[in-house]
Image (tube, rainbow, N blue to C red; front, side, top):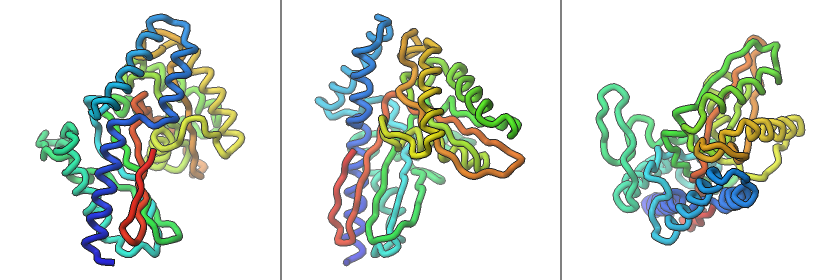
Length: 293
């Protein structure tokens, strides 16, 4: 296939995915928000959840971003070894970010950390951030995640003594949610990454928070049990929607792990606010594609 045609197809798919992600909240998240609205007993917290649901409805009707902070763009890419042209992927995804900034529009959020310079198009050194994983087959699949600054601000890395094990994990997660309070715009999804190294723990925590669908069980039985225990414990803190007090501080706790060095127990904790924004595109070798949430 003509490389230019494929490059344009990837860019179109990415632009559609970005557009869908910033406007439409995924169905699993909407259902979770509707559920806690019906179960919340605090009037003030229920009022906040109701405002969130109205916000979602208005964004869909007006086709405008669901939050004024349209985040920084993260791409989680899975590409087959047989895909016709791997070298064009990065260029296409970066171009889509530039176009999306103008056409949706997106708030230009990328700034030089030293000078404060803003290029105005959501690009820059390492931005948008592209994570690439190679898989069998000949398709390209990527999920775009516009990650807001408020929920990112309270991300944290703990390095407890490794011998403390699960006890340290529970303490770290509860402490992180207490410290975060209302700042990440609860109800949140709490992503927890255990093991690996410092960077690995935070990386898998972010993937767990942003990519995994609500209601999906953890494939590791011991982690599934820990997620359910922490979900109950965190919601008993009483922080509530937007920090006004109530039954529901978190929508879910998602945990992933990596094997670690015996001398360390990294625990990465990343928050995703209620405005979960993600959309996935699958591009075929012939340039056809589909986008879904």
